[in-house]
Image (cartoon, rainbow, N blue to C red; front, side):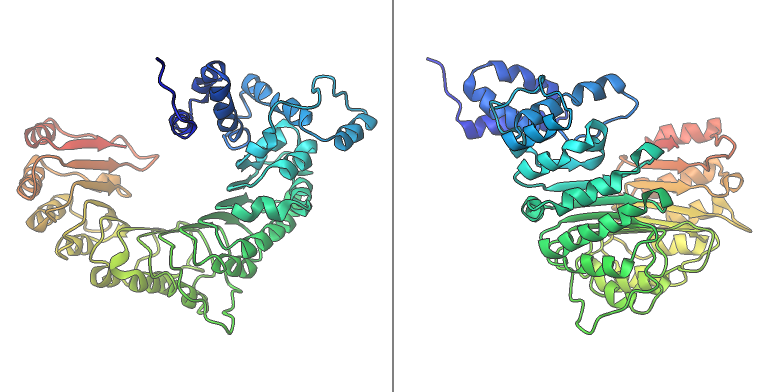
Length: 456
C-alpha cells in the first residue's frame, strides 16, 4: 500500500528543491497528482518577480515574460474590459485561471516587472497578499524614464499598505542622474511605508543626493526589528538629532557603511552610540578626500558595541590613517575576523601581541618607507594568536613584499606550534601590479608545513 505524504511535509520537501535555485526541478512534481500540483504551483509562482533576470539573455527573458499572460487571466472583468477598450488583444489570456496566481507573489524585484511589462503592475500588486522583499535597482537608458512613475503608481494603489505590511527586506540602489529624478520622489513615498511597518529586518540603500535626514529617521523607526543595514554614498551633513532620544537598535547585528559623507557631524555620534548589539561592522572610505572621514563616529561605534563585535573591516584611503587604533585593542577583544588596511608594522605587531584569543582571520595592508617584510614576519612569529587560521596580506606596495625562505620558515614554525597544520595565507596583489612570485625555496617551505598559500 502506498504511503501518503502530508501536505506540510511535501511543502517542506519541495521548498528545499526550490531553495536550491533549480526551479526547473519542480516542474515534474506538477504531474504526479492533484495534491502535488496544488502544493507546487505556489512555490513556482512566488519567485516570478523575485529571481534575478539577466537582460542579455533574451530567450530566457522572453520565456519568463509569458507569465504576464497568466496574470491577465486572473484579472477581474472590469479590468479586462478596460484593456480591451484600449486596444489590447486578450485572446491569449482567457479569463478564469485555475489558480489565483498573483496571490502567490511574495518576492518582488521591480526591475523584473519593468522587463516584462510595466502596464500590468497595478493588477499584480493589487492582487498579491503581501511582499516580504522589495528591491529598486536601476541601470537606466532613455526608454526607462517612466520607471519613477511606475513606482509612484504602485505605492499610490489603495491596497499598497496591505501589500507592504509584512515587508522584511528593502533595497534601493539609486544613482544621482537627472533622468531618474522621479525616483527620489518615489523613494520618499517608500520611506513613509518604512516608518509605519516597524518590522523591517534588512535595509540596503544607495542614496546619493537624497534627503538623508529623513532617511536616517526612517531607519531609526525600525530600530527594534532591523538586523542588517547597508548604506552607500549618502550624505548626513545635515542630520540633526531630535529632542527625543534615538534609543538602542536592539536587533541590529550588521552595519555596512560605504563612502558616506557627513558622519563626522557631531549629531551623528548620538546615532553611533545606539548600535549596542553589533557583531559585524564594515566601514569603507576609499575616496581621495579627507572631508567626511568619520573617525569619531567609528570610535563611538567600536566603544559602544565593544566585545559584541566579532567582525570588523575598516577600508580607508591610503592617505587617511586610523589614529584611534587603540580603541580596537582596548574594547573589541572578542574579535573573530579583523580587516584593517594601511597599517604600519608596529600596529600589525600590536594586533599579534594583544591576546586576541578568538581571532581566526586577520587581513591587513602594510608597507611604506623603511618597510622590511622579513623583519615583520619574524616579529609576527613571536606571538601568533593560537586561534588564528587565515592571514590575508593586501599588497599596496607589491615591490616591498619580498621575504626569504628563512623568515617564512620562522613564521610557520611559530604558527604551527599554535594549533596544527590547517593554516592558510592569502596574498592579494594590486590590480595593475607585476606578478607576485615565490621562489623555489619558499615553495618548499610552504609544502613542508602544509600551509595553503593562495595568490589573488
